[in-house]
Length: 460
Image (cartoon, rainbow, N blue to C red; front, side, top):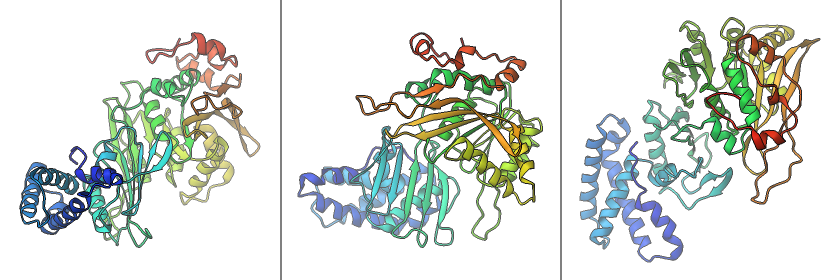
């Protein structure tokens, strides 16, 4: 996708409120020229095989010809701006161009041609952006998914894809999308987050950062849990950055989102079935294959079904230090979800056997949530203990104090507190040569906030 500047179409929409008498004329002319370009170059645009520079030249030529035949009175400047805008629209993100390149926007939600919402600072707000019609929106979606070899139509009305910068895209077409098509773009930072960034924005504390780095370096198996859009993938990417550079990492995802900085990374991506319903490659298929690729670490973007059983088996058979995420409302719910997904693998396993596998495989659960001020934060860090009867024991190492008052700027202060309990995991980490400062588990946070500074180069 070209990273062109925002087109005139978006600017005209923003200026509509000042009642520009020329805006209606320009919108009408733009719509006519846009439809002419799509009608003449439609097959070439959708095939997505032409060289980008050659394709842009062809589009600009058709636009120039169409504008010369336009009956609306247009000045030379207006024609030039319209030509640039339509070219950006046909070849890029169209009306979404400005939003895609806006660093303050973290998510874009299109609820049909006339309703576009964005998320800024954890809050969803409407925008004045809109598409010409349903066909216009379909064209933009088709171009986005074609970039990664995916397709969407009435026969396959749902698709997951990604933008060249790694941002995740989900689209749903009618008849599934009533009033659609619907498009959701979750953007990712061009510069991946570091642990210092997460501490700075209040996602976690220096104490938690100290413990999590030690756990990754000491090959603890970590499960990151939380609801939708709570920052699970971002935290997983940050945790993965602590894997030593001499270890081989295999990542497995539905659509590639993880942003790892190591060089020795093998990224695998699932594949949906083709139009004939064949050729599907699932997360579970990739996980089984990954075990033959000599991985030191296996990182699964998200466990959703039977692959949970294979992940537990891998953790219990020498692939320590593996990481994954799961949707859940609490650490205890996360275990229940993993148990349910394991039973979805198609084997008639006793529940106790599944729980023993989880108790043996998982070491730590890090739970994230969206707080009432819209921020994404770690709310619990919980150690997974042994079985007692038919119940897996859980021990909270850090918990959130939900009684914290809202600050003067409307945001909640950091309220993640140590419980004072030292996890048994610390002894295993020490045996592996990774020592954890006992002060990490100190209930008294005052000396941490005043005297302890986090350093990614080493823990002090």
